[in-house]
Image 1 (cartoon, rainbow, N blue to C red):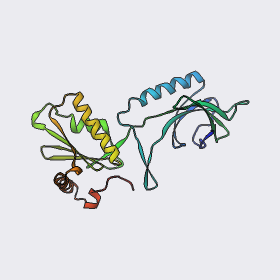
Image 2 (spheres, rainbow, N blue to C red):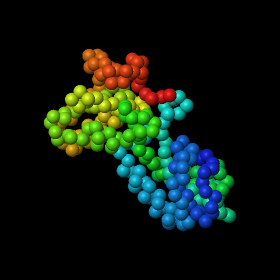
Image 3 (cartoon, one colour):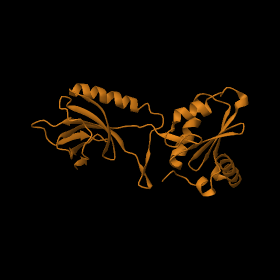
Image 4 (tube, one colour):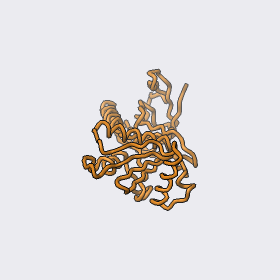
Length: 241
């Protein structure tokens, strides 16, 4: 079955650089990553990008899209400036190893290769600007959990509530707001895994506050005291606009 990508309006038209790598999501070009004159050169960059992608700590899995949440589908795609004799359709292996026909909808470019790509998720940490000062998982872990982790007087607890992660250190509460509860669970589990690997004995994981009505009410009170939010806002389980 032929697949068709959107046009590549932002790709340079300088035909000296014949090969270009673009980042796409759901078939839409997001940005141009690099360009090369030769196939050998572009595949070297392609492999380097995949290697960097594999180092991402917390891959983005969801996008806010027109008032609802959709699964992210990030890919990097090698496209080639179309030359005389080039076919618009190219056979490329899919994730199952099968050759599939891929066709660009842009007459100037043909698709050479593609691969899934991990984009680092960022989070709203309460107290920081929700759009301009978003933080990565590593930043939160290093600054709010791992910091002073050998000091028994800086004992921390980590708890999940809906799409929120609550990090409490001696009554000082920090809160991370995730896109949805799936991301929050993934965040919580990765924190716990890292703490176990690093043998951080002064960090305790308290589970999902929603599962116990007494814990749930106490947690809601904590969030309300921190944020002065309404109950309806506290009880939301996603950041959908």
